[in-house]
Image: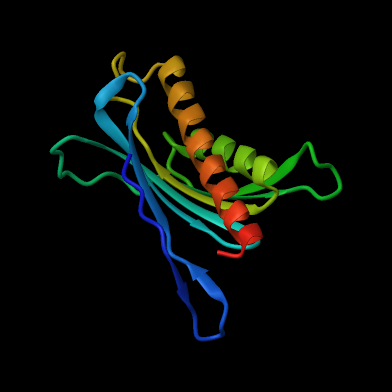
Length: 154
């Protein structure tokens, strides 16, 4: 897994977190990788996801872009709205944005153009759920690392 992260000082004296870029193989399709670009701010998260096969240089559709935030009155619920929809990815993107908002208690923007068509069985529900779980696991881990760094003062 390739990870790159750094912090730079902005003009206002506040730290601006450089996006974290991660890549890992689809659970049942090692030739296809999920690429993540993750920006973690104090009150929000911006996440972009896509897939690419090894050596593939073709372009993919933009996918869906969804905004979700935790409901402060009912912590078990999240509110979401699709800002841009692409039929094949809007459900996955909405579920991901809502779950991340609930787990991180931050506003979340998710742009997603992941395709599971190249997965071992062509993108079954099980393959999609495995990919979903892996993305959630990786993103939550990065958010927790960032929170721990803030507590330590780095």
